[in-house]
Length: 394
Image 1 (cartoon, rainbow, N blue to C red):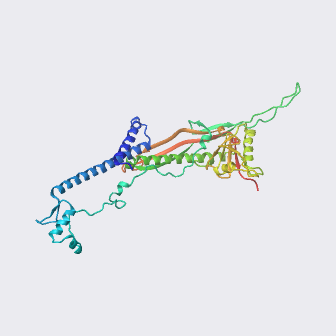
Image 2: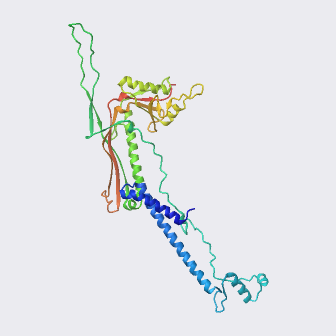
Image 3: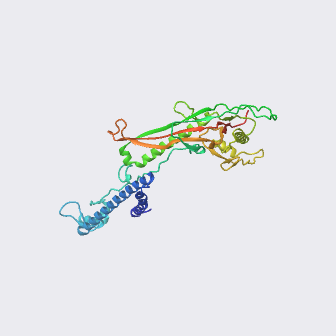
């Protein structure tokens, strides 16, 4: 086990390695938290080493006193002088008129100045035990599912709050073969239907004291990270399942996309058919499958009648199309799409603001932190997506 000096030297070396990041202003929350904890630990080691040195000095002084005056009998002018406890016992026995045999027989005892207490660590919050408690500032975090859906779409910026676009219908009438002087048939393109996609806002806030900001900055970083993840989780939910009511976006599942119910085909066959259906309906090529991890696992271990693996998947691909396995989609449902045909619209980016001007926060040394973002979803071609219900029909 490393000595206190060795442990202190190792900590100082690690702190010197962090100096460059601090000087360049590139230290993140974890680095700052480490430096604070390491400095506190070095300070604690210095206190222990100072205490040990003081104890050694006191012991040396006591030894010098014993060497000069010897061990003395407790009280009285007829004190017995001896240089050791053993010598003191013998002289005391002789003074009392006993020899060794009679002293043992009579249970002869002597008293001398000696510390009989045993040093122990002590109770959990007393004695030396607090020195033994070390805090690991790297917490055990709750599960956070990877957020993958937004990255499947194209991205676009918007300056207003509503984006509208025309949707053209099919041409009315058809061209025909005509005679040399025959009349050509008329065709007509109907007026477009205008669609609109609104920009929504997702946000949350948390409150903290100024003391906590100063003393536990690394904890504030953890809270801020959790708040930002929660915001992005809501974003993913809205992109897939938003119902378009009140402040909600209209998610992909509520855009009139194609659907495929159970039939006699296997799941793998129907997923392939869904990708083909996108191409024959829109001319887009499916660029991703989105499935629950359990459903993708079932395809991974699929076997034929002889128990041989079918090897339907190739790493993270099915039918040579990238497959995203996420619990963002429920088990028993798969989404096939030409995701790049749709856009996630963003107005600005993630915004993090802090203030002490809310109600009486200033008077009570409090701050509030708010995280927010504004985004929308544009789906010009709903038929470029197919929602597949997995499983065979009964």
